[in-house]
Length: 117
Length: 422
Ligand SMILES: Cc1cc2nc3c(=O)[nH]c(=O)nc-3n(C[C@H](O)[C@H](O)[C@H](O)COP(=O)(O)OP(=O)(O)OC[C@H]3O[C@@H](n4cnc5c(N)ncnc54)[C@H](O)[C@@H]3O)c2cc1C
Ligand code: SF4
Image (cartoon, rainbow over the protein chains, first blue to last red):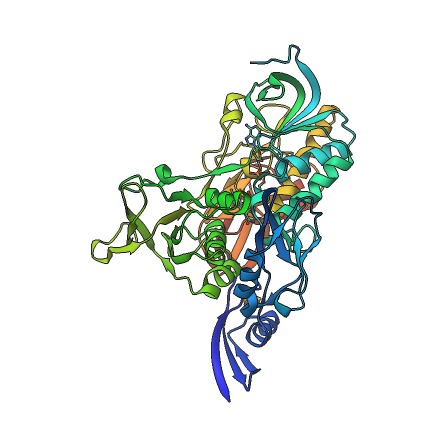
């Protein structure tokens, strides 16, 4: 099955409007990009879009703790991960970089502390 | 009030413990200056980065995508490693032209510090509703985006549930996403100009990802509500940025976030008699980041508003290094020429250059979006350097390096221009 999608390349400030043709979920044509990076971006963004997730979790004895995903996780898991993180409460001291939720929502990605608390 | 009954003497006082102050202090210590002191009015070091929990910091400097706290921690760890003294919860209230710094704190009361040199690194503050003059009532629920960021990320409470954001700079975009992730409904982000001042990446990942509409050429014309905000009237604006009556529309919301620009915080510089640039709102500096008052240096957002903290750190390192040279009596003293903004350019920093040295990076901000841009630098009517760029935008600071050979050809004021590639 063929479909076309329009996305904005975010690899540089040009922000080229890309027209991406997908055949059975695979990228078969990219138009509108001024350079190769646009094509790479289109492939990633249309086949397996990922996002860095950053937020805070509650600390029972202090101010909120900033946390982040160790690496980008699947975009469509973002709200599910937020739900899980809303229920998380940690107790200080917490070292920077320590795992707050391992393998969050089965994404294979850990949520880690951005700083110490 | 308590009072430290003697005047303390130190080589260098750094005012502000944000990324600029930290990087400047570190570099100055690395250049052999032993007794320095960082003064920070907040409870912890790190400045505004402490509340910027999102990622995207350090891409240039560390080739990594760090969160704000992670970026700050790298410098705070280094400050501790080097044993650089600092005082938090300490507010500087005055600086004199002869480097007497007055500060107050709960712990030490009023303290006077006589410094060999001073680095100004106080950052900036956000423009508020008063600064943009929106008519209407004065209900609760109207905040600057940075204040909302502080509430959500440092205090852990949400300012509201139905949100409109005015201003599409990066802070506004980041806060639209943050509020949405925390469960609020973000009705729209409005931008007065026909283009957004934010990064493309933030428009895609903060708005498009969540189907938040970005309304370009729109503004808020009225604020409604008695005690709590009940809504705003918005309108499209014409080419003179005036609201068009027929396009007025009411949006129901309980929170309005303002992300309408940052202003360097320079009351202290003014007190010290430092010459300010009316365009940047920061000090006029030379390439050493020395102000018009000898031995007082400036860097970071207090000098001019940066979009990337990486450049803040870089600039602070120059200021720190220069302060060390100044203290050792080795800062070169040469005649300077002015570096000016020509067509297509809003401002240039540094504003004065002496032309010595091996190479020099001039930072400047374009005054409009220009595709197929040609950047040219000339001095006394002679063209020194030309560079082509696919695009320049007011939202991203630009820079251009002059090499030793080009610097030797500097014989009069320097002008940077941005035009269309012919
Ligand atoms: C709300 C907001 C959000 C931002 N988000 C981003 C972002 O997402 N990405 C990005 O790259 N940049 C962001 N920036 C820009 C960011 O400010 C800079 O990248 C960087 O933090 C500037 O560093 P600085 O040290 O100059 O200023 P700051 O980080 O503001 O630090 C200045 C410090 O000086 C202290 N100070 C001020 N006056 C006094 C005084 N009188 N006495 C003692 N101490 C004083 C302040 O308390 C503060 O800690 C943001 C800016 C703001 C205002
Ligand atoms: S395709 Fe190339 S030029 Fe266009 S936005 Fe992407 S990276 Fe920039």
